[in-house]
Image (cartoon, rainbow, N blue to C red; front, side, top):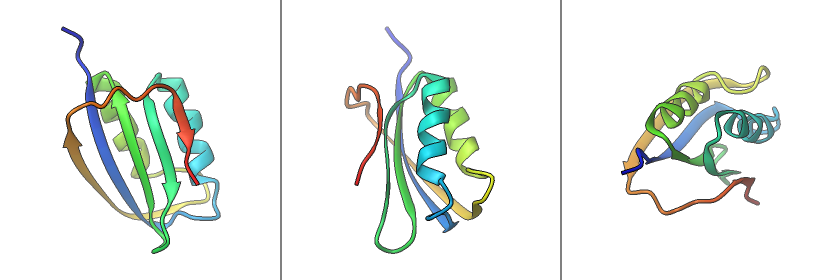
Length: 92
């Protein structure tokens, strides 16, 4: 059985307009994690990471700092059943 987990993440702070989504995608691709990232109307960033538990946990930890220009104030995470995400994309 493949070790695969899914984390649904919400990131608060100064996280829009600071390349947060682009650097999240770059980091997810390095970690070989599937999923997506998008901006929310309330100023937060929402992301889903799916893949091996260790890689997903690495992405959740990465979100606590994010892109160099970001100022993250909070990260909330909910773990759910994997949904067979393939690839990593920026959603509009």
